[in-house]
Length: 116
Length: 116
Image (spheres, rainbow over the protein chains, first blue to last red):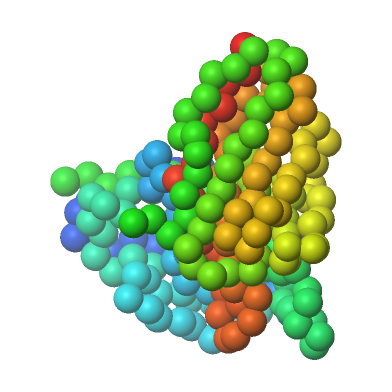
């Protein structure tokens, strides 16, 4: 499986933007880039995913490099509730038959601390 | 009410005891998963099930077994618990069909298991 590399930790101030980087130099052409986060004492939750184009949703934006070897999760205005461990995950795409597993392989993630 | 529930939330047991962790979901998803998380590490997949009749080993299945009693229920058993199985255990679900079927996994709140 292709691996991802993330900084161990990052810090931000409340209401400022946060850019969480992820390197995935061995990504294959069919790997999707997923981001999950794990709030303290909770299970992980889905944040966003993308393949080639930049993506936006209500939680965050995902910027994908043109060569797809890196990506950045952007939280536009960090809040205290965004303090969590953020996981960048490569996920193989489903096969044409629709039965592919598409598993999630979690690394250590980035611990984001948000200061008031 | 939570969509994915796990029982018990905390359990302390002794080496050699048989332990069952239960997971129930009301999301109507076909796919269910069991992960474990060790301190400071990401999640690792133990078992996964595509439907009631389809159960597959994950990356760390040794020492564990599972039972898919119904679409909504997926149990994880430790036949003879050992101290290095002390960890946080998460159940997750995902859709099997539709445009979101490979996008999100929904996680339960976790079960903290301590084996003395």
